[in-house]
Amino acid sequence: MKELHLKEVSHNVKVGDTCEYICPNILEDTLFFDDGKPIGFYIKDIGNYSPKASQLADIADKELRSKNVPKSLMKRSSGFIDDDKSKQVLQYSTILGSIPPKPHMRRPYPTRSSVHGVATAKTFIKAMLMLAKESENIIKQITPELYEQQKNIIADNIAKEWRFSDLFTSSISNFNIAADFHRDNGNLKGCSNVIIAKRKNSVGGCTTIPDYGATVASDDNSMLYYPAWRNVHGVTPITPTHSNGYRNTLVFYPLANFPKD
Figure 1: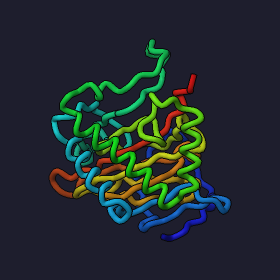
Figure 2: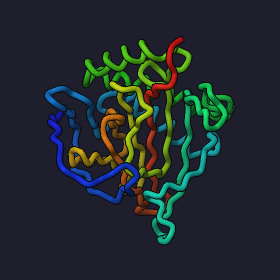
Figure 3: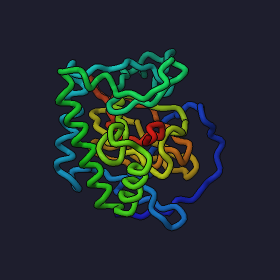
């Protein structure tokens, strides 16, 4: 695996800026270092580390695209350009696991995603829970120190009832969704997200981190493990190259709003 020692570069990107298409420059299995310490990695094919993870990702991807799973339709400005019909794509997402309190919506308490109560979504939910566990096994293989660090932080801060497997609280599956530049401020500090990509006949959907001049590829069956709270980052627009082309990400993340009693 290639080692990349990240170095900060100057840029003018701000939170809220639109993320345009950027050609990825991280294309192979890469371990990221900052100040001499590993902070995450990218692998092109999870099947090389866990054939089971590859099988589960295929199931979750297929189920998400079926009528079995409830979705929220989206219109993200990045990748959804209203004055160019040729670049518009169907966008939707589905959340699993824990949802933090939202006092501004008159819900000052945490809850679980309503999708867990939908009978037709059971196969999807089971596949995602098992995939979260397999992604944790991959993390343990590649960066055992980060696995232990995140496991301990979760154990110290998150009650079991709000966990999604051992290292996360929640999951979101994003279909064709790009993202303007942002920082995941609600995440538990010291922990990282997992992003597993499934795609067919499409380009784009790459995570870009301007602080390091780094844009990570989003190959089919790839996995990115990265602390999304550390840096401003965006996701480049997704454009199908053929009919029915798409890019879906199966994401697991640890939120900080579920403290232990």
